[in-house]
Image (cartoon, rainbow, N blue to C red):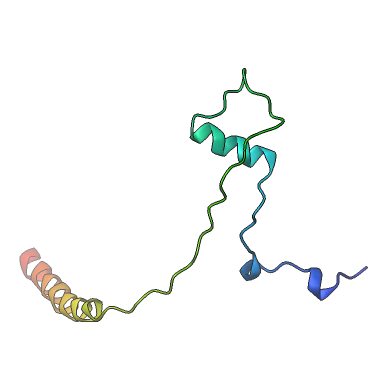
Length: 87
């Protein structure tokens, strides 16, 4: 049986979830020293904040273009110096 196009999940279209699984909540509580394995119950856990990641657009830097042009002659000078030293 085929799956409907609206139900398919693509790698680029994954969204951040606003609800964590119990295991994920326990991991966050352990990281903040708010949960101990022996003394706390895994039921009735306190709320945890979900960190939403936002992807920002990278700005093009003019300095990188200038540095790249300056680095190429320096690399050529090093390459030219090596064969001369081997003779």
